[in-house]
Amino acid sequence: MAAYKPTIGLEIHTILKTQTKMFCGCLNVPDEKQPNANICPICMAHPGTLPTINKEAVEKVIKLGIALNSQIAEVSKFDRKNYFYPDLPKAYQLSQYDQPLVSGGELNGIRLRRIHLEEDAARLLHDEKIKSTLVDFNRAGVPLMELVTEPDVTNGKQATDFAKELQLIMRYLGISDADMEKGHMRIEANLSLSADEKLGTKVEVKNLNSFKAVGDAIDYEIKRQTEFLDKGEKIIQETRGWDDKNKKTVSQRLKEEAHDYRYFPEPDLPSLNIKELFDSEKIKMEMPELPAQKRERFAKQYGLNKDQSGMLVENKLMAGYFEESASELEELAPGANFQSLFNYLTSDLKGLMKEGEVDFGEKLKISPEYFARLIFLISKNELNSRMTKDILAEMFKTGLNPEDVIKLKGLDETVSEKSLSEIIDSVISENPKAIEDYKKGQENVIQFLIGKAMQKLKGRGNPDQLRDLFKGEIK
Ligand code: ADP
Ligand code: MG
Ligand code: ZN
Image 1 (cartoon, rainbow, N blue to C red):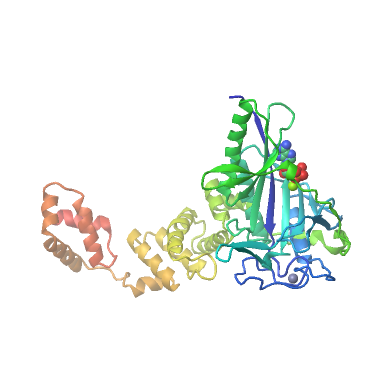
Image 2: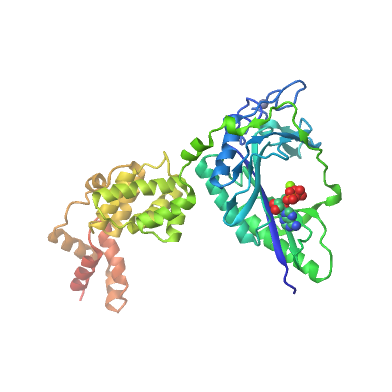
């Protein structure tokens, strides 16, 4: 098998989170369930209507451009991209051709070509029952941002890493929810193989509905094209779709059928003097800390490794929660070690949250302050792991502070020697079979007895102490 060099460029469309649509006053609710709830004569393309530019959408694209170290255009404009399809009532899409808002820039070592703004199309619903196709215009005219990379990607993993980082940046900037499953973020991959310096014929892969599909489709396509070239066959320029069920790409459209869009400047919109309309210095100043910076800072400031800081930063709200808890903990115990905070946050607390379908945000009842207090008590060796679990679960349910939970559950009452030995005795007399097994040499039975005793103690008691007591009692 000969070695070919894969060349991959990505085209990523993202629905922006704005109050209203791109060129009219309709609400921008891309997931609206009620069909055609947010429509008006402008986004329905009634004759005589005129578009106006949504400044909020333009500003959001500029924000991303600044975050990615791109050049922001001084002047930009919109163009008509003509094609005929039932999801496009005007028979042209307002897009940007030769003067995109943003050009250049770089992310994860992949150069960016451009970022421009356009409008989304309507959704077609093929209804089997009535054997007909319905059109829902809620998404028609919603602001859609397109980012195009240079062909710098060489494999599936690199493509998914790029797309994930872009998604995270967009979420940090608050410009989009960028959910792939909901179609807020859609990725297309252009791919070719070459045996020498000359780029090969490219194939465009669509219908990639998850990050995994992006990686899988690219790796599949590299393999398919390699086998083709090895057989001496030619790659044809075409659009292929990813079949997620059968894990392969299938041909959808050949180049011969490709459109000529007859782009021309939109006469009903003024060109945009970006320099005059936006204060990019101010936007820069107000830029939030971006994921890459936060990862680095978290690692340094809290003594976490790369994977740990990455795990926190992956969720902006979780990163915020960690940071607030850490500052509370630092107040309780100056010079505190944050490893245990990280561990309890990412395993125990996250576990409870997953079970209860609660996210970091309003629904989580435990305040960072109380969470820090719990970690503080653990660090003083005042709680055994069983008690910690119970207290955390109670805090999760009620939002109470850990000290109150301890009082409420009676966990602070010290157990007298006398009641402890009574409990040991009753566990022994209630479990004759276990005692017999233990005497026969089944050492691990002691674990079962300790568990029984702790149940009676309602979670109090120290397992090591109980083990000694049992061993002393059963001879
Ligand atoms: P088109 O005009 O067909 O949309 P573009 O030149 O605009 O093609 O490029 C679209 C995307 O395809 C970009 O991400 C670009 O990096 C990528 N691309 C261009 N040529 C190739 C090639 N030969 N192999 C792989 N990707 C390519
Ligand atoms: Mg293209
Ligand atoms: Zn409208």
